[in-house]
Length: 345
Image 1 (cartoon, helix red, strand yellow):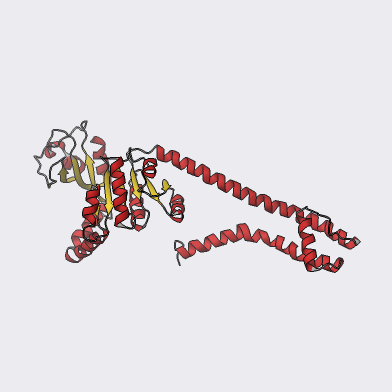
Image 2 (cartoon, rainbow, N blue to C red; image 1 turned 60 degrees about the horizontal axis):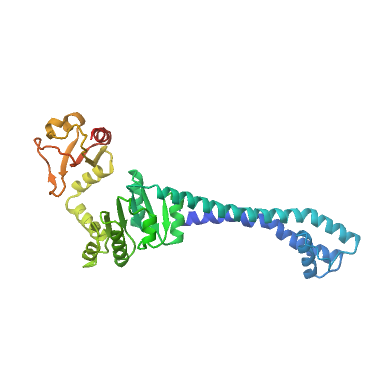
């Protein structure tokens, strides 16, 4: 199997645990075998008495109820003290250090994470870190969008921490958890937990805490589920099953069109990218037509559509279409050219 498989990761963890915890314990086990045998041969003790005397000797307890009486037994005890007592103290110190450092490291990491979350602004809250949540977070990170993940499963939280994503453990429908995630300052919330009921509860809570928040909710596709989520306050409802089915059908009916869209959306081999750009009030192109702005001539960019507030999407706008403040330009072109245009807007 490959290095990234769950089996390989489990094997590496077991090997690391063996080297760190089990392997150092072999000398101690050896002492607990040699000691009783030595006392049995030199002092005539039973194996249990020899084990008891070995244990109190190497731990420096020394109750004195059992003691070697022969010169050979006493010399053996001296050797056992010098070889075993120091090692046992070392083992105990390592265990204590691991426990203390691990606890402190966890506390410090959590404190730093909470500080990072409190500083977030205009960010996204992702509720649920299943397969869909993981993909959403990966794309948000690729596009440098700040976000925080809310997850209730402790084992999943550990995997989120390993990825370095800001996270909170708890129920995403809890007011306190959403407040701690910065819902008042958030730009949007994405709820992709396992059931429609949970997504409805999260949507209701989030909408109650922030009436202007953009909420994207996952639907199972069951009839009526999308309507309930919309009534709960979801801005958009997406059913992965419906989208997957449509995409598969489109690949059969219009394969070339789908391939082109994939290239445009993912900046593929053609180097193309489809992006949305907001026109600010300070943009030089405000009040000019598309032809006058030189978007096509200067940057080699095609304006596919323009979205204006409270108006239908304007597809394939003509060269005499005027650019206005607040317009969202849906553009297609090379990544570097889009970035250059974005700086002027």
